[in-house]
Image (cartoon, rainbow, N blue to C red; front, side, top):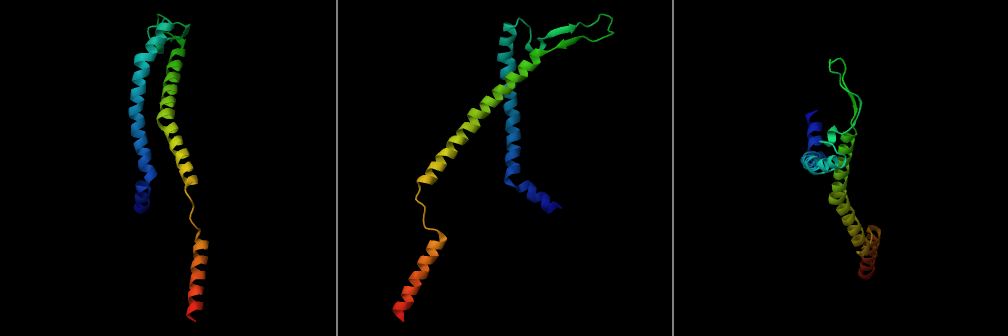
Length: 139
């Protein structure tokens, strides 16, 4: 039981996944700061709202007696989440996907350009022929 767990943990992709989660969490803090500190205030200014997360349409105001909660369609929160998603997707694409695709294409071109050596069958055939010549010349 512990042997299987040890093999699972020591697999390379588990370590890679753990590193990706840690870096992703740190990156999320950066993007959240960027969205909340720069983009949300600019959009809130555009829509004349104090805070983008508070921007929305009030369908039913809160009652003063406390009998019922107000109902608000908070489109500002959705817009904020959308901006954050687009920022993360953009950075992941340009920082990770695009360079990896570039290196894959470059590697594929190098492999195509490199001359391929003889196959195993061709080498074995050549060795057989050399051994046959040596045997015939000696006998």
